[in-house]
Every structure is written in C-alpha cells, then in structure tokens.
Image 1 (cartoon, rainbow, N blue to C red):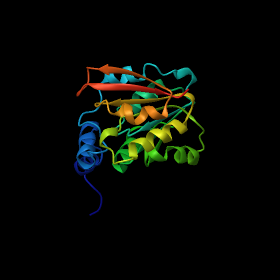
Image 2 (image 1 turned 120 degrees about the vertical axis):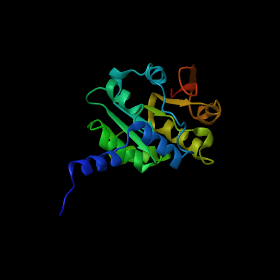
Image 3 (image 1 turned 90 degrees about the horizontal axis):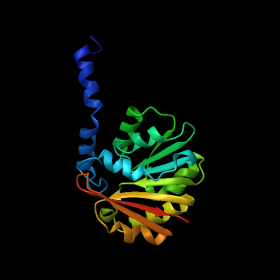
Length: 203
C-alpha cells in the first residue's frame, strides 16, 4: 500500500513546517554565535527601527540575518509594489523557511554571508541599496567579520543610504562607525532584552 493517511500527511506537514518561535529557537541552538537573541524582536523595536525609512523613495533594501522573518514581514508590509528586499542569511534552514512561508515576488532570499553583499547584489543584477538592516550580533561574530560586513555595507549603499542596526551591546558602534559619516542612536526598553538601535548614515 502506498501513500499516507490524512493524519500522517498532517503530521509530516507539521514536522516540516515549524512555527516561527520554534524555528527561531532551533536556529539559536544550532548557530548561537550568529543569532543575537533567543527571542525575536518586539513590535515596538521593529516600528521604531523602521520609522526613519523614506518608503516612497526606497527601491532596494538589504536585510542581514532575517531569521524567521521578524523584520522581513513588516518591511514587506511597508515596501512599494515595485521595490525589492534582498534577505541574506548564512543559515539554510532559515532561508528555506522564509521561502516557504513568505510567497512575495519582491523578496529575494540568499543563503550567504553579509560580507559578500556587493557580490550578491551584482549577481542579482541590482545596483546600490537605499537601506541595509541587521540584527547580527557584531560583538560575537568571528574576528574580522564585523568590520568586513560594515565596510561592505558602506560600499553597497548609495550616497545618503543608511545602515540600520539593532543590538544589545554598545560595542557595535566602534565596529561600524568608522565606515560611515554620522550615526544616530536610540534605546528601546520594550524588547527582551532591551535593544539599542543604531542608524549609520552614508553621506
């Protein structure tokens, strides 16, 4: 006898399609150095981080470490119909999850490193980005990776572009700021743990 019963099919579907919290937790356990927190960012953090974005003039956004789409979905909610979001993650499980759970033609998902952002955009046929956003834990990345990502991001952004970073430690400023002209910073208490929000501007 071949095939599966309805109950077996439902079980296989549940097993293959974890919920976002379960998927996020599993990703944290497998790659703790690359996932900044055991809990996804709060809605207050998301709204505050994205508040300065000029959506009307935004054509391309790059997201590093999208995970289960905590920021990806709100970005797509705000993004113009003809704009693009390129999401780059080193974790293939997260990439597969996003491809299955967010069927949006504006979203390009790449399994790769943020340090290779310029090569990735070139391979996809894109020019400079308007914004980049990252929740990667810069302070726990392997030596040299943080500055490499910051440098590559500065090169990938158009003049006037902004690199938006949400972190839990202030050391990120010393890593990223040397590659940008100016920086703004705020603090979001309604997050677990409280988050530091950074906007690094390329003039």
